[in-house]
Structures are given as C-alpha cells and as structure tokens.
Image (cartoon, rainbow, N blue to C red; front, top):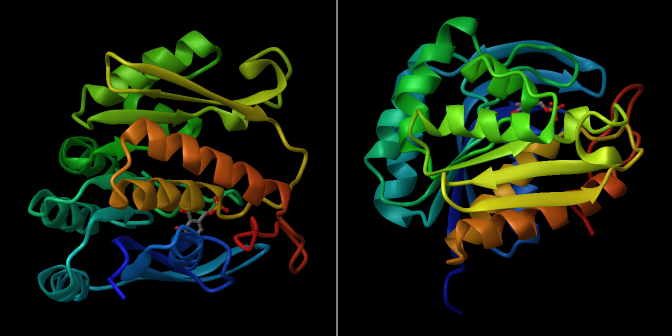
Length: 267
Ligand code: PLP
C-alpha cells in the first residue's frame, strides 16, 4: 500500500480531547491523511476550561519537528497553540525552512477565556509567523488583536483580511462565525467566513447552528484545510471542504462533562 499524504500539527495538548492536537489528529484521520504531532504545550483542560498550562522547552519542539520532517517528511503543516514569543519564533523559523504549505491558526484565547498565547507573543506572530503562512485562519477576536480591525460588517471582513495580508500570509481566512448570532450584524443569521489572497474573494456561508458544544472548532477547521492541501487541493478547494466538514462536526457536537462539549469528528 502506498503511504497517505502526511500532515503535521504543531500545537498544544487538550487533555479533554476536544481541541488541540487531539482534535487535529482526529480530523486528519477523518480526511484520510497520516497525522503527526509536534507538541508545544500541555494543558490540563476539560469542558469547564483550562485548569493549567505548561510550555515545552524550545529544544523539545525543535527536536520533535526535525525528527518528523527529516525522516518522514510532510506535505502540509498546521500550527495551533504556541504559548510564548520564543515558541512562535522557533516554529516560524522551522516552517520557513520547510517547503510544505503551512496553515496558521493564530490561537489566542479559548472559548472559556483562557489565554493560550502570551500578549508579548503577538508581535512575533505578526512579524515572524504570518510571513511564512500559506493560509492564516484568525477568528474575529484574533484578527482584531493582530491588526486592530474590529469587524462589524461584511465589509469589515474585507478590511480585516487586507490588514492581515499586509503581514505576509498568502491567503487570509477570516472566520466571521462569532458575530453572526447578533442578528443583522454579520451574515444575516449565517456563519460567514471570508477567504482572499488579495485578488480572489471567496465568501463561505453556512447555516448558523444553535449548538453550544463547539469546543475545538478552530483546530478542526485548520487541520481539515491542511489535510486538503496535503492531498494537492488548492487553498479555496481545501477551505470549502474544511468548512463543510466543520459545519457537520458542529451540528453533531455533543455534551461532555458539565460545560462546553466538543465538535464531533466521527461523522
Ligand atoms: N486548547 C488547546 C490546546 C487549543 O489548541 C485550543 C484552540 O486552538 C483550545 C484549547 C481552544 O479551543 P476552543 O476555543 O475551541 O474551546
């Protein structure tokens, strides 16, 4: 049997299995690619929030990356929780030296409001990580933090994407879902995402789902995009397929523990 495409996630662990590398590897399995992981941080986490977080040493991140890339090779990389400026810069350097496309999910704060990235790391994300990204996938809070653009309308999505592209990623995918619940603000009740490379524009619309169990949505979307890229799809093709997958995963998100449950990867 020939080997499936290989995809590497560089991200944090969610002990509750809903987000982070656990969501990434489940998504990659669903997409039929071989998932591999470089762990950046360990979180003690459940449906109620993040109870603790510990970064790995820079050498441990570097060594994991080299082990995977130098022997097995990768067709796409995805980054998630990077925790500190030091780790952001290390990962940016490693990705910059690898030919494979990179999907950068600039993870800032979890749905429970727990910080997954030090404020002091934002500048490194802007100046080191975004320039080596093939696609950057911020949500509205993350793009506001990175660019200062607060999105309140579909035109705001365009402005936020342009501001993000000025830092150097080839494509910007701005996830508008968070605002779509406020009727009349963005999307008219639909979850709207906007993808552009500065010339092409793609509006991705899906029904807004009334399910609070959405833990791991961002990780799942970015991993699905990376899986599509590893299979040779274009960025717009991979993003469209990823959006469809994540919409199904949110529809089937389920209760676990006493708080916010995970999206479902088993459909
Ligand atoms: N925990 C880890 C390790 C993550 O990487 C992420 C998101 O990227 C989260 C938690 C946050 O997940 P959510 O905001 O979907 O609850």
